[in-house]
Length: 313
Image (cartoon, rainbow, N blue to C red; front, side, top):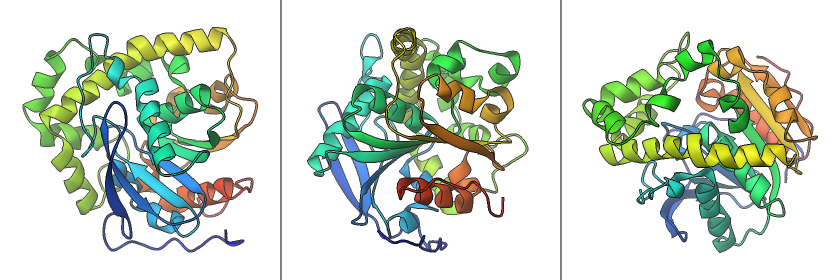
C-alpha cells in the first residue's frame, strides 16, 4: 500500500474501472462491482441508493484497496427475495450473511467495511455477529439502531418519517410510493438545506431507474424488519453489553438529521471502546456531497493512520 494518499480525481463515468459480477449467497443474488488489488474494503450503500453512491470515491480507493461495492439485497440490481412472515429476509443479520458468504467466495477471510445509512447498520451487525472477520468499520451518518429507536424525538421523527411510514403493513406504503416513483425518489433525496445539486445527473438517473415497485416493497420490508427483528436483537445485545471489538470511525453530517438530533460519538461509545469521528459539513449523503473529505478520512483510517479530520472543510 502507498505511503501517500493517491489523488482523488473526478471519474468520467459511474464506477469507472470496476468490473461486475452477479454472486449468489444462500439467500439472494447480489450485484457486485469490484476493482483494485490491495487489502479488501467492502462498501455498503444506504437507502434509497445503490452501490453507485460510492462512485465519486470508489475509483480512487481502488488504487490502494480491493474495493467491493455491492447492491444490498432488495436494492438496485440485486435480487429481491420474499421477506418472510416476520420480514426476516430483510433483517440486517440476513444482509450481513450475504456479505460474509460473498467475501468468502472472493477469498477474503478478513476485511474492512465502510457503510452509509442502511449499509452502516449492516456493518454494525457484521461486526457483532462475525468479529473474527471484520478488521475495521467506518460508518457514515448514523447512530446504532437501538439508540435511534429508544430515543425518538419530535425533531428526528419529522425528518425521518419514512422509518415509520415504510414499516406500515403492506401494501399501504408500497401503493402510495409506487404511484409516482420518480417524484418519490427526488423528494426523498432532496434533503433540507442541501438540495439535489450534490448528485450527478448520471447517479440520479440510476437511482430513478432502480426505484421500481419491487425495490420499494423490498425497502419497506427492510424497515419492517428494522423496527421488529433488528430492534429486538439490538436491545438484547445492548442489555448484554456486547461490544464491537474492531476500530470504528464515525462521520456524520453537521447538516443532517443525524447531526441535528443525536450525539453520534456518545451513541457509538455505548457499543465500542475504540471509536473516533467528527462532524463534517454535509447533509445525509456525505460521499456524494463532500467526497474529498470522506475519501481522505477513509484512506487514512483504512491505511492504518488516525484520521486528522482536518484540512479544507
